[in-house]
Structure formats: C-alpha cells, structure tokens
Length: 108
Image (cartoon, rainbow, N blue to C red; front, side, top):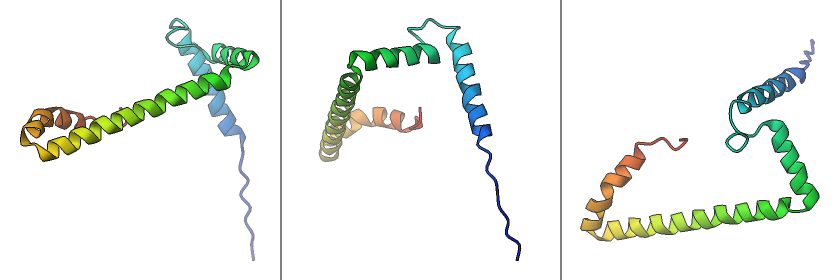
C-alpha cells in the first residue's frame, strides 16, 4: 500500500501578501495620504492609536455608527415596504426607485 504525502508550501502565500503590500505602497504614493494612506502610514497610525489607548474606543464608536445606520435603514425600508403593500399610490411612487436599485449588483 502506497501512502502519498502532500507537502504544502507556505511561501507562495507570503509572496502574494508581500506583492499586494508593495502594490498598495506604490499606488498610495500616487495619491495624498488623506485619500489613500500607504501600509506604513496605516501601521504608524494603528500604533499611535494603540499607544494613546483610544483604538478600542474608536472601534467601538465606528461599530455603533454601523449598527445605528443598519437599524435606521432597516426600519425605513421595512416601513416603506409595509406602507407600499397597503397603499397602491405609495407603491406607484416608490416602484421606479426600487426597480433602479434592484438593477445594481449588491457587490457595488
């Protein structure tokens, strides 16, 4: 009986990561740091926020904004959906907008 052992080389994944970081740095140099900071600038900022002790506070605030935005959009969308289902005039009013957004792929 032959036993075959597959050896997985971890280095190609590291090369890919290094190439992506290099591309990010090259592209970042074409734009001001306000628009596209490079990986080194991003790392410096991360370390600064960590040293000052405000990283977790900033992350929590960003997460709170995300949750509030999601809840507000859900309530508005559900409310409009129920209202459109109960009222023909509202349905005719919002149908063109809904149809337009349905044509846009979710990834974009």
